[in-house]
Length: 472
Image (cartoon, rainbow, N blue to C red):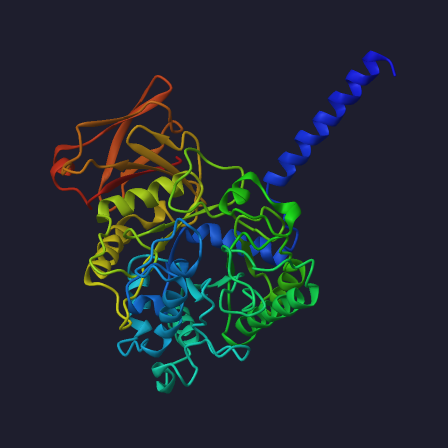
């Protein structure tokens, strides 16, 4: 082969390799018209709540992870088997007699939250719904709460939030550390993965796949309208979908093809238009991505949702330190300005209540949203996205919103606010949401908003002040 031909072939192969890697990292295009319609609806909602709740709340420990035998885990006992026995026995003490999901739902609606995601089952395998496929569940006779008329907790929560007008999301863990066909009892658990080789024991793996399919089918069939299927446990995936990120999670890489095509097909047959989020598995079964506890530096070329806790933990812990209201609203604004949704984590305690501080945060967020929600809902990202202390959103109504992020001790508006990178159309009007019309003038490639004296000291809200630019 001639040298030039060899070089050309090598370049072609390199190009194909790069293209393949790019395709693996990019989300697949959704074609289902009902799903596309639901995704447009979801983008309009912007603000959701994620609730982790399970037997782990009884001791105020991190959800599920303390029974994972990886060396980064800290637990209260040195003997792993003893600890796991204690953990699985928490079901005998879990009895949330103050469980009143209507109170949560009303607080969420008043805070301006538009959809909710609830942990129907976390990695530990304990079901917060009445699954017919396991006894490790809230409705089992060995769980004291099973005699309560509201023992099917997932149903009660979905009904309560749906009644308040919120969209419904079912969080479901693909791995199940309680299931003998995932962590086989004759083998020790080695890490978060299945503890046997599915290729060596295909019938056993099929039993687990059928079990997973069956539980998701229960959730899609008997719990009313569901808008989101939010699947966690991204290490359960076909080996060809592994990325450098997913490989870094585990000491072993195991082929765990759970047949998402079959699961998704069934789920959408039961729930037409269902959004499916197979977290971190960048395939056609991941309708949007979910960066956890972080916000991207810039807008992303795909749909995304930051999931982040109101405090420091996903599940309830005593003496939780909650983020200030100002911080939470700034997070919401920053996320929305970059084209994302904010899924905020709030966790009930062992009795079934939210902390007073959590209710206070929701109340104060709601007061801000009462004034400024039109700059959040039904908006899309617009350049320059963020300029200094000002974020931007574009409403479907044609208006552009400039959201001024107040400093911690900033209680009054400045005399002028300069927007160096945003120039509205000539003759556009500007109003402060919750306040009066104000004037503006062009300056270079941007503009300057002039603030009247009476508005400077009598601001319409706290934390973020919003200016609406409407076309003439």
